[in-house]
Length: 274
Image (tube, rainbow, N blue to C red; front, side):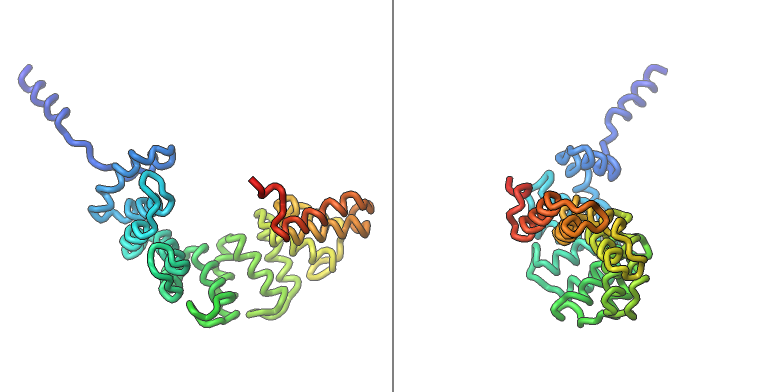
């Protein structure tokens, strides 16, 4: 009986420690990057797609290893080719920006599309942006396609896409011009804290576009955006104080907000000098 126990104990002590994806992720989350690398690297080499993605992230960020965009691309690609959507988005951005490989906007757009077609809202937002703002290198300019992809992302709750879709409805680009619809999308994004949407919604209230004119509501939304550092909202809030619209006329506050807006627009904001 004693002999059997000894054999069992010896067997337990001799079992090798196998790499563990969850342990690697937990180590990463607590900032123990050396342990994370030790757990993830063997799994990544064995073809584990999540480990490959996480390893790419660590190379891109320089956590646990020297920052190495080429190394990040290598691991992202392996994960992306196995269908990991976050890896597809990240390698798309690296192609588009030329990080870790020669810049290739077409290849960047191709990876964005793969992720977007799997329903990734961030990729859908990025692809919409390419159709609207790219010089034509990655995709042909097409505001209708931009609106289509923005809508897909916006309907999933992506605040940046909601704000962008609002701007399209505001200007009538890619969709029929509709101020009420613009205000609706601005509000969705603004309520999530998007400062651009907050500034735009404030303007809609100040002008009575798509919503009843309400200077008090204009001030409320301008203030939210202004406190996030949005220069347009800071300038407009300053004008509200100057004109006494929605707030008591107050030239001191008007000067403060207008000065902050001018400082931010010129790049001289003292909060950014460190």
